Length: 413
Image (cartoon, rainbow, N blue to C red):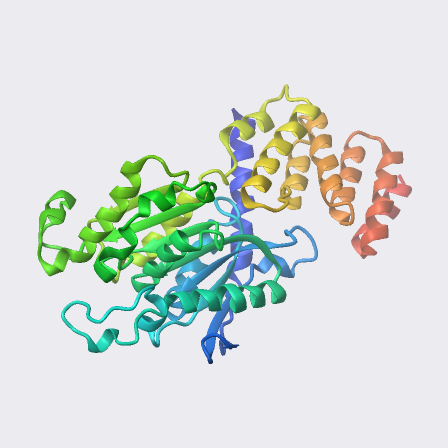
C-alpha cells in the first residue's frame, strides 16, 4: 500500500511539475499573427500557443494535436488555460489556434443565407458565408498551421454561439476535417433549425466513426426564475427558442441510436449564454479524452511487487499503442516519468527499476538521461564496471561537466 501511495504521489507530482513549467510561459500574444486569405479576400488575425515542452531538448513529443477556436479574441485564452491545467495528465499537450471572428460574424459563421431572423432583415443580409469560411480554414489556415508548427493530424474544433453553429455544420457536412467538435450553446435555431433536418440520416454514416461531439446548453432565463429543463422546453416564448432548438437537435441524435458518433450534450441550469463557455471547454475536453489519463490497471501493474519486466513493458506498450491509435500518431511514454520511476524503484524493486530504465533508453536512445539513470542503477547494485559503461554513454551524448564528474568518480572507486 505504501508503494502504491508513493507511486500515485510521484505521478501526480510529475504531471504537476510539467504544468507548472508551462505556466511560466503560458503564452505571449503581443501582436497577433495576420494571415491573408485569398478566399475571404481579407487579412485575418490568429493567435497560436505551442506547448512549452516543444522548446525542450528532451522529453517531448515530435508533434502535437491542434485545437482551432473561433472567436479567438474571446475564447483563445480560456482554451489555453484549460489545456495547460489538464495536460499532460488528463489530456494531451496541444497547440491552440485562435481565429478572429469578431467582425462579420453573421457573414462568416452562418451556413445558410436567410432573408430574416428574429424579426429583422438588416442584420442578416450578408448571412450564409459559413461554407466559404470553412474553405478558408481547410485550404488556407490549416495548411499554414501545419507548415509552420509541429502539428499532428488530430484536430479539435471549438465554437460558441454562431461559432458553435459553424462547428456543428462542419461536423455534419465536412466530418473529415476534424476529429473532435465542441459546440458551446450553438445557435441551432438558425434558419428554422436547418441543421436538425435529416441529421439522423447523415450521422448514421460510418464516416462518423471515431468522431466526437460535445454540446452545451445554457439556461436562457434569469437565475431566479425557471431552471427545470422539462419546463423550459415546453415554453413557447422567444426567450427559450434557442434552448428548444438545441434540445431537439441533441435528443434527435441521442434517440436515433444508429450513429457511430461519440456524442454528449449537457444542460447547465446555472449558466447563461455569456458564462457558459469556460465550463463547457473544461467539460468538453474531459469528455473527449476519458481514455487518456493513466488507468488504475496500469498503476496496479506498476506497483505490484511481483510484476516482471516483461509484464511491465507489455502494459506500457498496450497503453501507448492505444493512445497512438486513438490520436492517430505515435505516442511514447514521457522520458522523465520513466526515469523517475526507474529511480524510485531502484532500492526496493531492482528488476522493475531496470525495466523502466531500459524503456527510457529504448524510447529515447539519443538522450543522456536514460543512460545516466542506468549508470545509477548499476552503481546501486555494486556493478561499477557497467555503471562506468553507461556513465561514458551519458557523457558522450551530453558532454556536460556533471556527467564528466560522475564518470571520473566511478573510475576512482
